[in-house]
Length: 59
Image (tube, rainbow, N blue to C red):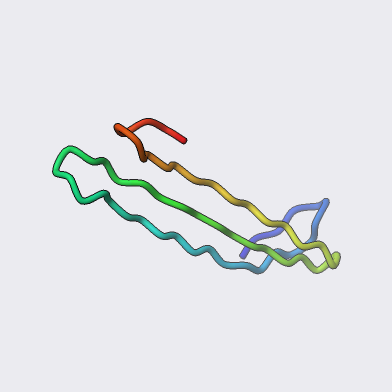
């Protein structure tokens, strides 16, 4: 929840998924998505990821 002059009041939620490869040297990867609805009838979507796959390189 929050508010701003441009959007009015905000309501929303966030989900995150984190996983790791099978090898001991593999690093964690994550995927994050959030959605917010405002009293000005706006839908704001935020997607962020940090995927480390082949040889722990960012994809």
